[in-house]
Image 1: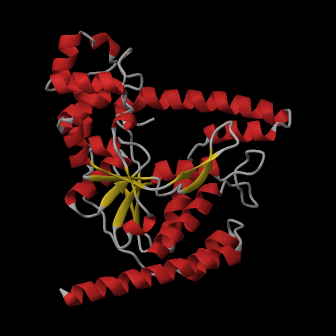
Image 2 (image 1 turned 180 degrees about the vertical axis):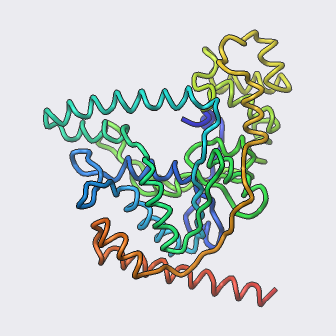
Image 3 (image 1 turned 120 degrees about the vertical axis):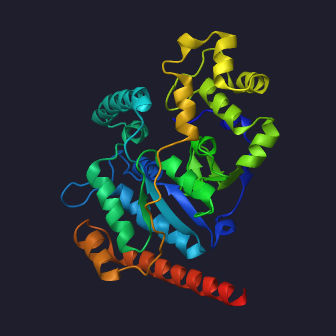
Length: 345
């Protein structure tokens, strides 16, 4: 779900080349869900290997990452750890949605309504433990660093961006701004033309960059008020937000009051927030993160990658080799330019 503040935020369209030679901390789970949702057959079934293991996430990961590196982007994937206890309500809500979508998918498939089936199938995606481990294995083989966050991946990516260890955080959700990321890039994994749901029309999706300082200035609030704005409209820790309060009204309220405690008291909305709102604020201001990471991009291990993807996961060797060639060439160019810049300075 994420924070529901997108309608209030101005986003700058950019090209992927804008991110060349920049390090990008990508929310791994967010990205893998996109791949699992989109990369499916005509009947909604995900890609699988000869043993019935889902491989849609690996397909998206190898080919999209290769494209990013070829451009000169230095990706780092951040994996979620244990979710905060306050996220339990949102997790249960998501499971309920997936269960309902699965029922509709099976009915549509039985009636051979394949377009309808595929639409419902996209909402059933689930990341399993073996998918996570396979993703980490693949990233290590192709020389791309990954970080295991102790809790929220977006929090970890935002922390790394705020330290200057990466240039930007990347996710489809806006939570990174509340976590303090100075920059957020969206649509890094889904650029291109996308079909609108239930319509015979397509829209072009381009990467977007959002700067926290500019957001705060344009909205006329500080970061603490931005977190209050998120709580009023809904976060992963109080998914329903406050009844009757939309983004514009929420912004007006946050401009008027200093913090969520004052808002709750003045508006008498204690019963509409299922958890202590100050605990939500604490998660965003002081999330559980780690400094236990090392960011190194290495030359891909071609033989082992071929063995893992082609021999074990039924991938096309020609396509994988093409991706590995892009990755190798991209890393070489990144390293050459980095060396030249250091020499010139």
